[in-house]
Length: 82
Image (cartoon, rainbow, N blue to C red):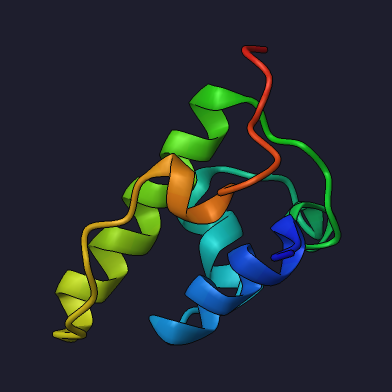
């Protein structure tokens, strides 16, 4: 079974982003990205923000990946509608 934190970290590393860079891009407080990679549940709005940021970074760097969706980041666990 794919764990949520490993999936989020996998995509961050795949697009060559840092935790700090994604915190700045998504407006997260310092060190919060670490919590999400460790399994903290983001809620739908934040998860959509994560996918948007990762997709944007891939485009900016010319990295060819499929367009990510929330389900790519959280394939088995699902997320709440907070």
